[in-house]
Image 1 (cartoon, rainbow, N blue to C red):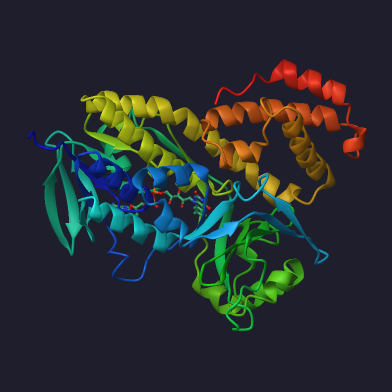
Image 2 (spheres, helix red, strand yellow; image 1 turned 60 degrees about the vertical axis):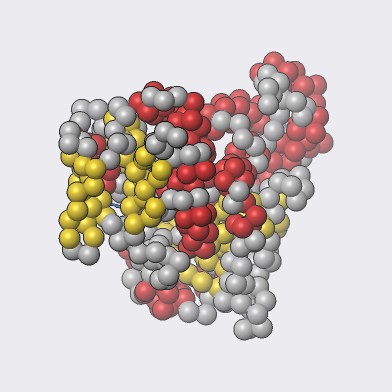
Length: 453
Ligand SMILES: Cc1cc2nc3c(=O)[nH]c(=O)nc-3n(C[C@H](O)[C@H](O)[C@H](O)COP(=O)(O)OP(=O)(O)OC[C@H]3O[C@@H](n4cnc5c(N)ncnc54)[C@H](O)[C@@H]3O)c2cc1C
């Protein structure tokens, strides 16, 4: 039997662990190097976003690896958005048509541990506490730091699944600066995480569990996602600096509590340890990484956040990273030339990464500023009505991104056309009764071709 092809992955986070599993299941010999300790032994030291929304794209990738059931067991279903207005009222907006169209809240550490178990079971060799420091691409040797000692590891190909601050990307940039020009656009808004404990220590959720809660407030917002241990992780998104309110002006727990009492009262009364959490937890930074070239012949390729980090407002960064894993594994299966596989992977995924990066930026405006706006709500009602009338041509934007597997670029293209139609039809309308349905039919037929899948 011929030797198995070998591949080296840098990073045993979400994408690294899943890609390792998929490749090992397809007959590859896989070695992963991860800078942190094993999260299955020591407490997860993620340092950012405690829980994540898993959607159909990510779920489909997990299904391919056989890990879907194990992951779903740890998730809490989120059927829609619960929007909390300033006046203390809340309104539930379903994401999809029924419980087949929902998203799932999953703990990052638990998910990572589950995927590492699958990788290990598939035969992947994982070395923890090995941090990639530099790469000698000519000698095909990667230098890892392990407990203060450097070791040179030979490789055939390196896969960079080492996240937004990728050391492999930095090494590729240092080797070919003219090819690997990366640009990160920082958002200017950061985030801080807080926690809502179970209700009155009775062991039950303090808010409706099967929803993603949003407190939209114009130029900033708070969200809360449920955890399976009956807590919620609350994330405040706020400008980093500038006039109040910004993180610059909320220096201590006391001023943060006063701000929450005024702006997010229904959340504030549930966050028992707000002052301590505020002072203990760092402000996370958010940005979009634009990189036009993801591979160096057959020697290196990047995926996930290392190739296309994005702001988290569509809840798709991990989902996109999981789609990358499926695409790269498929390309490597189709050809013996790794360079051709990496090139085909980039051709397939780069336009889609750009599209979801842009949609994630657009969604921030929608979440913080529009979800309680009457004209936005009318357009959402109209989307549902147009979907019912023209199911072969029209689908809500959120459905295309979250519950379908159509390429992100296609979802983005159709969204732009649909937004034009929605704006035109609602220009003078106050409710669905005011819509000109004849014009609606003409616009949909003329501008949107039928779905092909
Ligand atoms: C606030 C916030 C909320 C989010 N919410 C969602 C959501 O709801 N849904 C969603 O789909 N996405 C969400 N995301 C995005 C998601 O977290 C990322 O897209 C996802 O983690 C990318 O996976 P990855 O494996 O590429 O990178 P990572 O998960 O960052 O993994 C990288 C791994 O590489 C390791 N590593 C780093 N450097 C080295 C090195 N030099 N040597 C060896 N190992 C190294 C790291 O320790 C880590 O284990 C969110 C992000 C943020 C910041």
